[in-house]
Amino acid sequence: MDIISRFKEKTIGVIMGGWSSEREISLISGRAIARALRGVGLKVKEIDFTPEVVSQIPELGIDVAFIILHGRPGEDGTVQGLFELYGIPYTGSGVEASAIGMDKIMTKRLFRYYRIPTPDYIYDPFHPVEKIAPGVASRLGFPIVIKPRSEGSSVGIEIVHDLDELVEKGRGLKEKFGDIFFEEYIKGMIATVGVLDEKALPILEINPKKEPFYDYKAKYTEGETEYIVPARITAKKTKKIQETALKAHRAIGCYGFSRVDLIFGDDGRPYFLEVNTLPGMTEGSNLPLEARAVGIDYQGVCLSMLSTALRWFS
Ligand SMILES: Nc1ncnc2c1ncn2[C@@H]1O[C@H](COP(=O)(O)OP(=O)(O)O)[C@@H](O)[C@H]1O
Ligand SMILES: [Mg+2]
Image 1 (cartoon, rainbow, N blue to C red):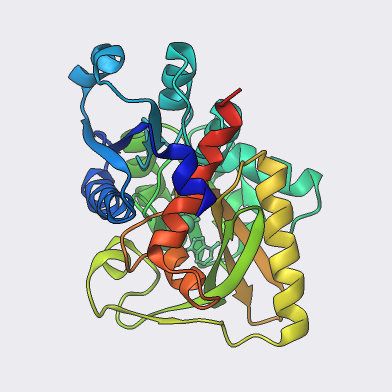
Image 2: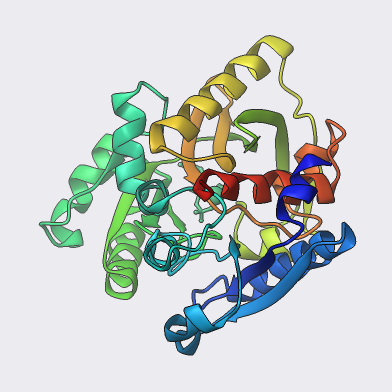
């Protein structure tokens, strides 16, 4: 394959781990990517990205960085900026798209600007939760979803059912995560659309079996969630959702690959939630599952992602 020959002489550093709440998933993703790249004969170094490594980047002896960090730092543009300053080509989205993708408020603002449907929400950093809670409740109606502005893996997401709970959980989350917002609850099918090589993959339908929503446990416990690909959505709606997912990817300014999360509402309409610039890459993760459904195996996904680093080669 052409991509393999382009990277034959290079040492690829798989940048994994980090120190966000998603460290463990990142390590599993990173090891799987390293294995796949070695499997096609490429030279790979696994880099556990710890705070100490930050100052050692020039001594790592890598020619290309395959970044597979989730959460902050890493998915938010900071690490991308680091490699940019050192002049080391890296995979995936650049600094700006990464920063926007990590920020659910900026993402939703762009969704609105580009008419990409997203659940109604209230973001008010200026007033205490107890003050705005009644207004939030009357506009969004219960249940209400409370989310941190910049987390991943469903960390910090709470679904509340009455005003007392709204105030209590809202205050707690604000204390813990700093910046939060309130979102209209959408009843429907949880789904996600990967983008690979600037093309939308099939939609993946996600059915958590026990958990009330697709929370951390449902995401990472074997057997907790049923995945169906392609999702049980009509061909016409599927096409429209894929087009909109690609539009979301572009609205954020992503490069090459991403994964766009949505809920296909019981009202027959899609509601886009967020764009993940560094989607999970364990062999059983959502994006590889979607790729497999169109005949792209795990190795193929890794090579496609690796090829995005070519944009930094002159
Ligand atoms: N507005 C909503 N209505 C209903 N469920 C939601 C809503 N927003 C999020 N969820 C649930 O939380 C999960 C994670 O939400 P998401 O916005 O993708 O954040 P994360 O960055 O943590 O993945 C979704 O897959 C869904 O199960
Ligand atoms: Mg998500």
